[in-house]
Length: 117
Image 1 (cartoon, rainbow, N blue to C red):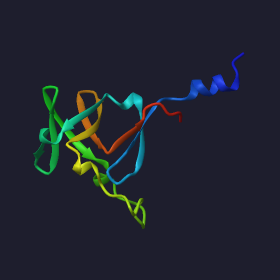
Image 2: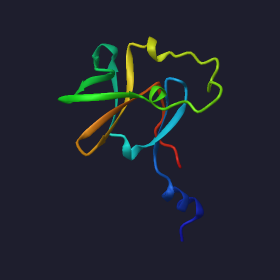
Image 3: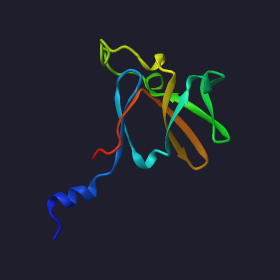
Image 4: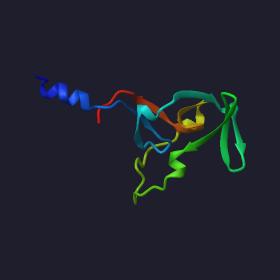
């Protein structure tokens, strides 16, 4: 008979924990992560009002969740937080693919890739 710990392990699913530019921590199921990529700032191009990068023979749109999702807090999440991603020479991206479409989620830092529910 399986112990309670064994039953709990069977229920866990691996997640990727990351931070956005505004220091918000977010998780994504690893099953939704196609690849983890790093692009130099020189590789990023503008297509209209959107940032994109040439990726595997196509164009990968990039999304910054901090700019896309509205902040619901009355006060800033981390008042003393200063953005350091803009000073780096490269950008970390979580690539998510569905059917024949892909999207790159710009992250500030990848914290862990094996957390339980």
